[in-house]
Image (cartoon, rainbow over all chains, first blue to last red; front, side, top):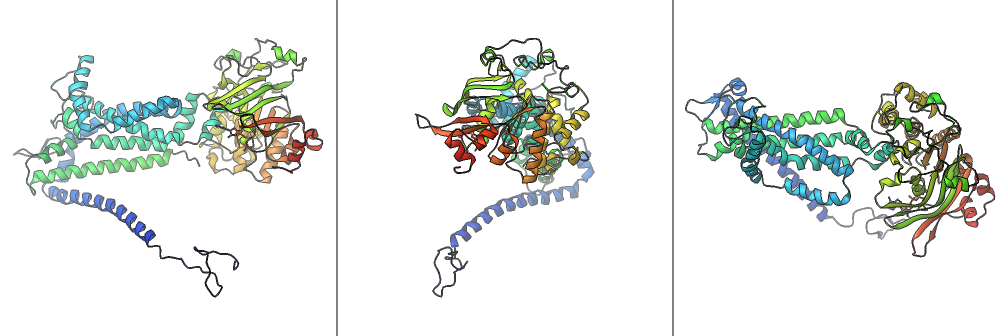
Length: 320
Length: 309
Ligand SMILES: Nc1ncnc2c1ncn2[C@@H]1O[C@H](COP(=O)(O)OP(=O)(O)OP(=O)(O)O)[C@@H](O)[C@H]1O
Ligand SMILES: [Mg+2]
């Protein structure tokens, strides 16, 4: 060892012993490290701040409204003089929109992803991928307008036998949200399927599998964790979506069955959106209600993400 | 050809001599499986003076990727129930040629094959040939073991399942594993994930997986390059056993391996073409013993004796 230069500079100390210390204090390295850590800390701190800002008013809220009345009550009229706080109608409204959205986004998104990852020639990919990305970046207010003024009349023409009422319909809003999240589902699932090693595909082709069998039996299962992630991400997007439902689903917090396609409803986000932009004073029960609904929304998405993690662990096909 | 009828769940009992000229029949047509009815004597078989025991008849084959030639002018025959080794320095197109033989190259965009590849007298690149069907008759084992991330059982059952083979799947799986010399290693853990096996076991699994669909030919692209000598020895023994039933083409960088197991050897090398491309071609094709002890070409001699890489 003694005969070899192993220090950063390659130089030796005067006494002939090898110099093993760093040549410079490397302040740049330390500064970068601090900057990176700071950035990571910012998002952690923000998350914490949001959670706290949700929890504190919620505690105030549950001081006045019993927890069970809130969670299981079926009358939602928190801003009325004779206020009731049964959150179920707007929870069901949110879940209904999400269900319609996923009903559209999962099949369309996953089939698009399979097409893009396995079938599409490079030329087609080069066109379709950017188009999907544009759709992904579309302002949600534009999609809301599309739903209200275009999709709603179109669907009424196609399905005139449905009990169409006013301008708002939960199903229309759900489908619009669904179309909005198709690119999210397809791009995440596409990435997951494309990262399946080529060797697995070749192995299947070499056994005489057709393209369809290779896609469905090898690539899709191998990519399942990414696909589940795509769906969960999409569902979170749908649950949290505000603008489209504000414009297209109405503001009627009524408890309707999920298949009542043409009913007007209100979602949790739409409630928060309309109420918070109204004239409310801090410290009032209405003010606290907004945060209680926000906290519930947070718990719902959190629960869904945790479920997804478990699903992924269960179904994952690990490849190296 | 030498397949026993009881181990061919996907076919009718086969008459001798075998006829594989139904390649072009759609895979979906069960009556056409390993077709017997439509026997046409192809003209090049007559050209070869009635010699019909060649599995592959490779004639003037060249392959290019996106217009750049990778290998050209390859001509030799691959005989039935023999092991044919393809040797030569890296990049000379051994894998490329091997992948032509079961039309795996179709999967690479920009890859073009010229010349003629006959498979039991049928043009492998004929207009009516279905590459999916071709691959059910000509199996392939890859350099890196590539088991599916599924159970051992499901790996073997994959081929029969996608081909819609009727019959007792358990039996098919056991037979394939036994023939792949893997049954005793794994019989108690068929439901375990294949990724829990050692590299050598995984490679034997891939061989067994290929056997489960009863191919005629097995193409192996450096099947032992990732394995230790003991696993390699096992796979070599396995190959010698399998050649009783199948024809095998193996690419290897291991000279001793080629010398130990193969009957015929093709030596490839890289030459500079007129357009200054590096193009692979076959320098010598002969009995393995001849290639290794008394090669006709000095380049072959230099390579097999290890004088040049
Ligand atoms: N998918 C591909 N796309 C483009 N060029 C390729 C592709 N595969 C191989 N080639 C080229 O074709 C030539 C032959 O490659 P090939 O893989 O057949 O060599 P090989 O003899 O198998 O080498 P090795 O012993 O290293 O595996 C090389 O020059 C390589 O760059
Ligand atoms: Mg190779």
